[in-house]
Length: 276
Ligand SMILES: Nc1ncnc2c1ncn2[C@@H]1O[C@H](COP(=O)(O)OP(=O)(O)OP(=O)(O)O)[C@@H](O)[C@H]1O
Image (tube, rainbow, N blue to C red; front, side, top):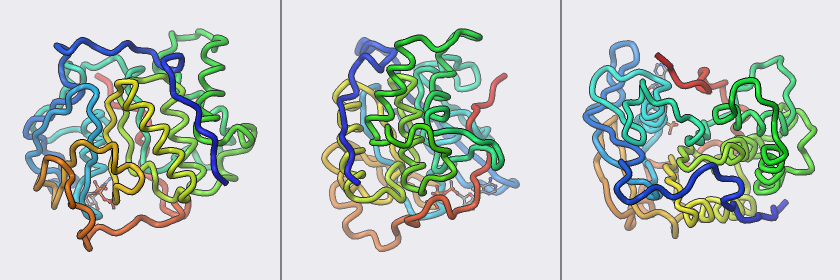
């Protein structure tokens, strides 16, 4: 099924383009992340200016997801620092500006949640506590569903969807909050070719609207025209940071992800960034 993509306009967006003097969306300095004392991200440094579209590439296990999670404060740093929009990640509060698309859906096993509910949950960070959804909030949810072609599945349980459809739910959830900064961990994984094209158009619209977009990718595919910069990780270290050039065309160690994300083991809980 091919999806109809409508423009992701500023109506769904809670931001104006920051002035050029704005701090970078992300500033990562000498970041080290360890699991069981084993470093999997080893001294990574870069800045991502606001409005840039960046691909993070690397073989399986090279540390891409871990780096994304560290950039959002979901996993702690062993050393080094991360700033989001000029604030240390631990003190960052403006989560409504951030749209995170994790590698796979991790709605609690037995909890029934409809597609619309999961998408609407993307607005929680920017809604004032206890405030009910406004008409604009509800419209943004419908707009996000439409953008990923899932309007007709809105009432279905997310558990009934295929892996690629669940991936599109996660993207819609990120869109619904109207953030200006996106971190997408393999948003195309398991998504069929027609829908990849449609998602690429949605992401292109985000880029045109001035959003920052950081994407973990295994191949540039339909996103290639958008990618200004590629950061390549190998064994937790940055081995390339610059224009993507022919990086992926001859990378036999990069292989596509499974076509069925739903068959993968559930990801560890990573929905809620660590707070002080
Ligand atoms: N929660 C965890 N506990 C322990 N080790 C982990 C955990 N998550 C990841 N790792 C390990 O850290 C390393 C980096 O994993 P990570 O998922 O960041 O890599 P990746 O580049 O995103 O891989 P992929 O392309 O397969 O998604 C791997 O060796 C992985 O096994």
